[in-house]
Image (tube, rainbow, N blue to C red; front, top):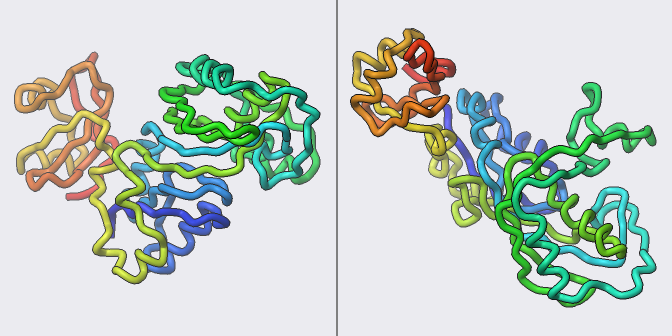
Amino acid sequence: MDGILVVNKSQGMTSRDVVNRVQRLTGIRKCGHAGTLDPMATGVLVICLGRTTRLVRYVQKMRKRYRARFRFGFTSDTDDIEGIVTPVDAGTLPDEKELQQALQENLGDIEQVPPRYSAVKIKGKQAYKLAREGKSIDLKSRIVSIYQFQLLGYEPPDWESIIECGSGTYVRSLGRDLGQRFGCGAVMTFLCREVIGNFTLEQAATLEEIEDKGWQEQLLPARNATAELAQFQCNSKQAEDIWHGKPMALLEAANTSALEITEEELAILDPQGELLAVAEINHQLQLIKPRIVLRG
């Protein structure tokens, strides 16, 4: 069976732990999560089942919103409270106005170095594994997008924020870098992912709730994974051609939908409105070529 489960991950579990549990609950071997949450983090973890695992990358690209808490006056080898925490002789901590200003200056595209304990790969091996082995790690900075960085409360040394960001952003690193900026250090003490694209905490269920209520009743259709792609609903004849991997004229789709021909990819729905395929738009040849075909 194909589809999506939106899990409210509990603290203490790895994302892989959640996938393993879903596999046992559903009996579906092919399962994958769309965006890692660290064990201390809670909140939205999107699990794709069956052929929907081929759409994981589309969910990973969606914007994410987090609620996070940080504490000034400390550093950590993991950049959060669960690592080896070291007090910093901070002197004077920033006041609320200074902190507000710093958050605003972190909006837009910024350079960020991932944490040493992260899933970023270095020569094919995850950084956290190298860190555990005590090996030297040279993590390169990369550009990440921050759309919102709102201060919810500040009772020194603790502060809480809402962060909306793009794919690849490490919230721990945001706190770490602000601690470095003010010369007082900072560690993350709490993290909850509230939103990924169109998947929200309100619709998420704990593993216990999924088991009690029946996972089939909570399964979302695969089309939710491609909600941010341009959509085209085909007719029966077109569906047959797409199922067999045949390309379709771009003009044929553009004349029958609100498709913007500037798009690079297209989610194709069957006549019943279910996701049939994801196609690549070749503007040079004016063709739509099925790339991921899910159903026939």
